[in-house]
Image (cartoon, rainbow, N blue to C red):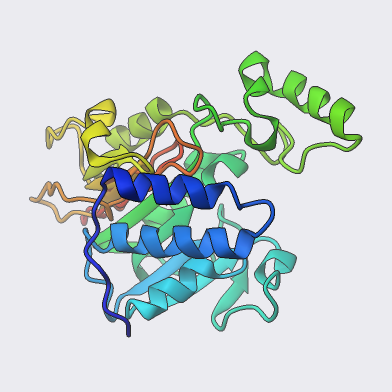
Length: 294
């Protein structure tokens, strides 16, 4: 188990992340290793990972699973694509092929349900969030980070032309590159907004929104994603950036905590936000939730 450095959402951190992001295409392994290390530090603000059972939904090659295990967690990965699971060689131990819409786990099976940059690739993202909440135990954390469609990076490799329409951006990409984009609008890429994700978190049963913050931006940008914490609106805790975090809650509690809470950067491609317990949010965001009992 490695000691985790305290998380600091300062300007220097944002610069490091954006510099690393520039290498994503040429050296994805280095970029995702940097992102995973930073994200697990962020997650650790909201939950002590030592000994916790964590599921990484859509974790592919296992960058986040490895960092979670280094932090002392018992981590497993579920992904629909066996090729992604083996992209870095042999799949990580504990990996399983399965759908985010029907996770191969029992209800309340894990302490933390985690996902980074997957939500916008799932057509029925609300169903994915509901599944993440289902498999998380009461008072557990749901941490979700995703790319906000309305951000400059919302169209992924077709950005910023997605502002003119997803199909138009995809057609332009194919004309210029002679091949369709990997992330095809309406098939493997869907428009998820921060507002829609937060709306889901606030209205979902058994979920309390813990936090919502820009994932890649400095902490002082947090007011961009100010999250109301009236208990009557938030049955669970969440964090995100647009990372969002939720927490499962007991019958008489309504906790507000940080990132699984997850944090959600609303205006950066790798966004995520802390904010819910046992409840997920949309947008480049990470979140954590708590589940309600009874």
